[in-house]
Image (cartoon, rainbow, N blue to C red; front, side):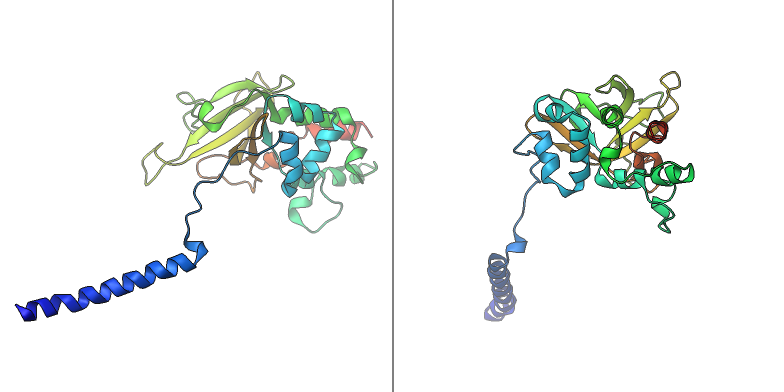
Length: 258
């Protein structure tokens, strides 16, 4: 009996000592602590949220140039927020070797003999207002409030159509991703598709959402992903998502105004 006790006691004692050491070590290292879920609530209005985040420095300026600062401070809205990178790629540079900035608005202005844009205020306020409105919706809508969309089976899961702030039309839906070949059991991906021509609902440009359900005091912000022309999961993320306003209309309006 003594031999049996000794045989089992020694390894057990060693395990207890090791366990105590691990627990002691965890207490000393803060990075072992569970940070919990990210807090989606922002203590301030949507305008203050944009101004507090360096990803939206340029977008915040555009809101002011468009004369929509009061909307972002006081009205209840949902904003599908393009980042400053979208503006950078839209405007672009002249004769740059950097591929993603070639073919931007400044290159078009240069090629047609027009003055290029030096500052954001070179664009007329009404143009900023027109295209910024395509990203704004009245009311507060989180991911859970939107229906499912399956871009390969839209007759069954079409998402839903919504009027933008200025009465353009967009389709918004949630892609239910697959896991190990099993459909619709994976993570949820919010998307917004701008309809270029409402009479042709199959002609649209889609942007995927990178971060959803940010909740300032007067609405909801969904941050759009920058597109590299490839899907995010099963959600399309068209390259036109990099163009402010989702298509070449912004280019045309600025060119004709100069």
